[in-house]
Figure 1 (cartoon, rainbow, N blue to C red):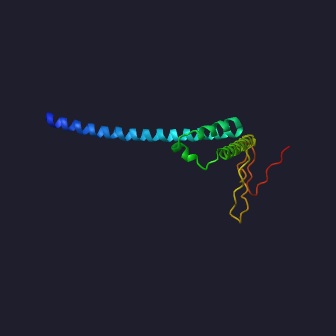
Figure 2 (cartoon, rainbow, N blue to C red):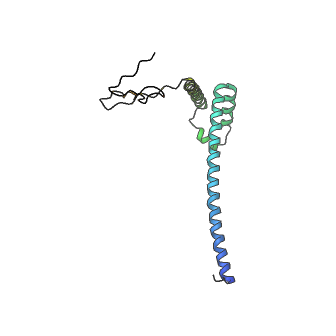
Figure 3 (tube, rainbow, N blue to C red):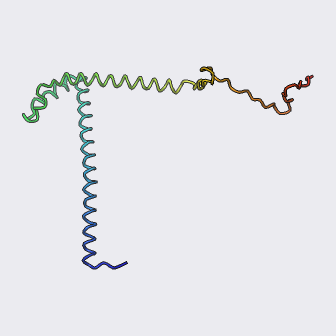
Length: 157
């Protein structure tokens, strides 16, 4: 193994530094993207909560509509032609549907947990879908006479 000259060592370290910085930028970009997605998701969920709350509380609905009316023109533009009360009612309907679906799933899970397990259905046999009968145990019990053809077991008294 040959020793590197100081110049070669410097070049090698600078190359490693550039590669490390590229990795850092890549990971930082992924983290930033995850943070943006989480922030967007939070805003969507908060909006849904506000819509549901507005449907349940007329005073809150009026307060939100008043706040929207006071927004600067560029911020109010997305709300032009949009009816907050209708959106709130639709959100409340969706929330009620989600609650009912969750209750139904809970009932199904409770029934499934309480139901006794049933045996597996019989498998079809070789002859036209007739279920195969289980093969009886042909080995005699210990101490019992063997059932050989042509031999009559002794009578028990």
